[in-house]
Length: 192
Image 1 (tube, rainbow, N blue to C red):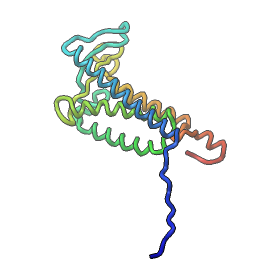
Image 2 (cartoon, helix red, strand yellow):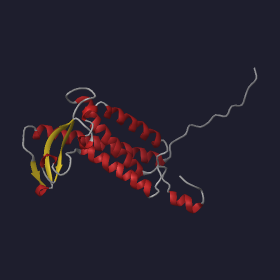
Image 3 (cartoon, rainbow, N blue to C red):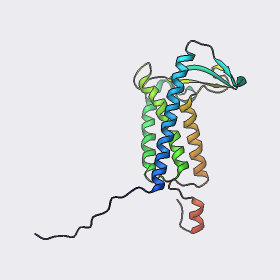
Image 4 (tube, rainbow, N blue to C red):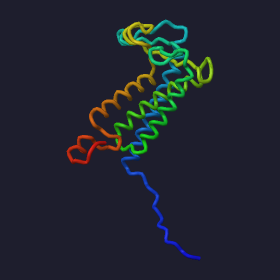
């Protein structure tokens, strides 16, 4: 029997920046989901059948509502679509995270994932049923009943902040692998 020399490839070990970024991603996601679940529990427990509660001199009103739609109550008849969109977002972030080394990008992705998971949990497990559950919203800015701004929750806030952070990182040339587009241009190595 002829023997062939096969080279054994060593297992790739993630670099420290990759591990730090994935830990930041996981911690941010878990923090957002935990805060979202806890604040929704408090809202349902303490705000059910109560008028809006004015706090911070009227800057914020705690006003419980169950939202069948997306942001700004859009798409109320398409509730089942939102969990599917969240799965697409999860897949997209999973693909992008393979080369994730930037802690800031990890936080942005964690905010987006945490926000998506927070509201998908409501869609899956709240009334009126699986995939069509209504999202618990309870924060109304500048007036009760969403008079001046749509009523929202922690997941909505995290999702919006994560998207804004991701756009800012992209516009400032920060790459997901921890480098910057401006450093690539200065060194002549091309675009990200």
